[in-house]
Length: 190
Image (cartoon, rainbow, N blue to C red; front, side, top):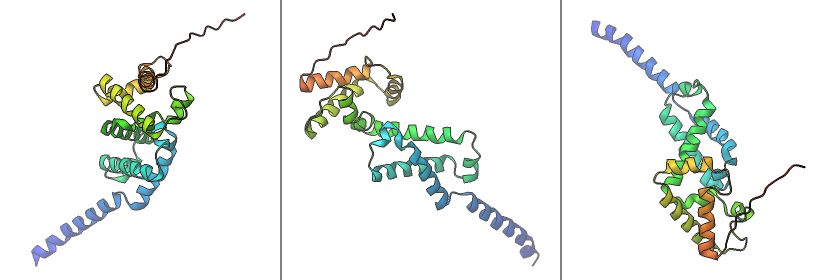
């Protein structure tokens, strides 16, 4: 009888601890709220080209990464600069997806964007577009040994004479016999 009486407080303590732990884990509403907040990132270049089902899978992956890093929801919410944390996971997920398949370049450099930039003509067939992205992915994989190097090159890519832009132009020239000439524009103030 003494053993039972002594065991009851420990049992009650264990049950209350287990109940508190269960309450602190992520529930379905919290996961859904995070996925809704991820829709704000849909305007990023890589993400805006995804279909709704593809974006849903992307959002689930980000949510799973955050839940793995922060298994207790209250500690996730208490994270300083929580938006920076979410943005870092979103960017890391994009880099991982690009690393998995270099042909995902079409999401980073969509065909319509390349047409507007004058890199590609607007009347390419599907096979020609696919050939361009295969060429471009091959050049990127040859130039950058890690996805991190490519990622930093994308971030630094601000001019038309960048290495990435030159790769795009080389592929367009190789496949479609386009030639590009660089024109220096000098502005003078009178």
